Image (cartoon, rainbow, N blue to C red; front, side):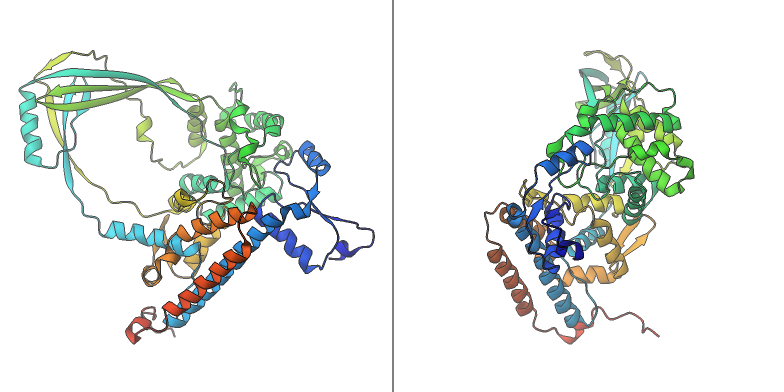
Length: 516
């Protein structure tokens, strides 16, 4: 405030993040300080010196961003009005603090829905008949009846099997993208077991030590002018990581540069500060996150992984049986991934570990026949969905409602990369969700809360609608006042719809045991 009012300051430059929330922070400060001086806007997404200088040479008038500010203010007011009224309404009705919010309530519902799907799941047995053909196994479709599977086995062993089709396809697995905060949190949860909040805190600590770029980002790309910087960092990483020792690595930087896909902040990568840092001196958890981000930069710029997939189909006793195999042609980025995982001392099993096992088929030819092939019947159970863990819940939050969201919207999914971890923590702290190992499970209160709330509050649809409106406001096509009227109506409707409850209903959230 003092700076803004100083006599020798003629104008103020808004150099906050290039996005909706960055605009809001600046305007709040500017207004609270009672500043009337001309304001200009620095709008940059790259932290390269050249980009910052260029940005300062092209400052815009602050008024040009009034519509963006209007959309940000609407978002803040709407969240507050609905959140505080709904929270107060349901807490008063049920005599129990029930936090309700546009982001946390649909997140809780996703956990409750998954829990219900697991509870109501009925296990069913199914069978495969497998033929053994010159050492390879070919499996039938699923068969639900054991007698039918046994009969097919017997028939097959007395018949001949013919190879009716042999398809060889060359396939490419592109390297993974760079990390945005959500994908970093998911990966750190699966590989290292860190919660979303722990990962954000560690990334923040590394950012404050200038070892990692800004973590609260939802972009997986770097800006077009960062090629040289990235190349320098990659060279540095190859020297720092023991598992890259002696490897000749030529990065393909084009894959990770795309200014159009960077809004407020670019993807998370290590910085050149690494050159002056002894990795061994960092706390282990910080070193893990820095290594994870560095490895991802190497993988993202490595060559694609290519393999040949072979699918052989055999006919026997009127049924078809399929055998699949693959041969790796070029390891590419998967080699770095493997070396990194091996370097992790106690690496957890990954879900796709089994799909990468080399499974080469013998040389079959179309029309080849096998007389009286040996056959077996294998028994399997259908499996229920798994409870959510942080990694899967973060993905679900990121995707929620996105099919209903305008492609131009600034935010997709529930929450922002910066708030998702805090939302999960808040649900745990409020007693609506509990952590069991890596799993996140809804508590009895959590399940009850979702049951008593109206669909508008538990569905991600509300966020999608708001985002679509906010996008139009930011473009100057919709009147912010009209949007706020709609929000006020919604708050009024909520309070009108739930005037009172029967006594037994009001006891729903009573603690099981008296607190002493």
